[in-house]
Image 1 (cartoon, rainbow, N blue to C red):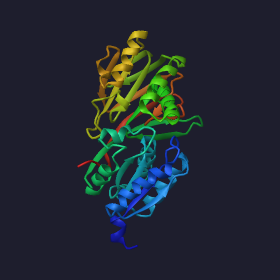
Image 2 (tube, one colour; image 1 turned 60 degrees about the horizontal axis):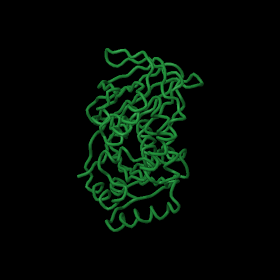
Image 3 (cartoon, one colour; image 1 turned 90 degrees about the vertical axis):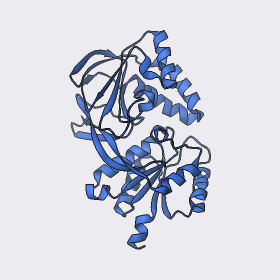
Image 4 (cartoon, rainbow, N blue to C red; image 1 turned 180 degrees about the vertical axis):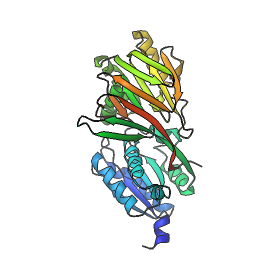
Length: 313
């Protein structure tokens, strides 16, 4: 393969969904659309979550300039973390695209990519319209005492919603439906811890009290940071104090209808850094995937315009 062909040929990483009976049928549909439009591509397929980063690194090292992830938020998260390990001169030449195919596709949905409209998605990707987007970054110490970091496209959740998102991911695999998984997660929530002792610093404000959940979003944050955009160099933060039961039900209704910030117990901020000094026993989720809870303090910042992302026309 000559260099000109490599510049135009897509590297496609297909991440089958584990909650459908015939994942290969999904790929056959996508393949039919790609072939009908004359797209030149090479496809690799992940066997499991752990293989996504390995395969993405393989596509980067083999010189593909367009890498398309057929997957959801977690697969995209793995891809951007691989890209951020590459030298800047390599990363700046790569365009990252997505064909939504995950349990959760919130970042793709932000750009109005529709999981059920593969034809439109591929047509938009072919046009090659690129926007440089931001990434959030969490720096933390793990249980081995190692200093680590992880990038995110969408959001970090600390507390109850991280636990609910974990439940939602599991129930979506069972039910398939977004609505059913949301309702079942909400019902299972009654068995979760509802508040956590936290100590945060956001801009000049200090939050030191019991908090139900915190969302720090570079994008919409699964509805909790609805005004966030992934290209303004800022993080939106929603801190939710523990409401009464009736207010909690109202809060989930507002979350489901896109009006989360209207709840009186939601306190919004916009910042470039959040310091978390304490979040006792709280789960931490990164782009919808539960991570090992950091040990001690951790810090969340924003890195502006570091990924070339293929966006709609």
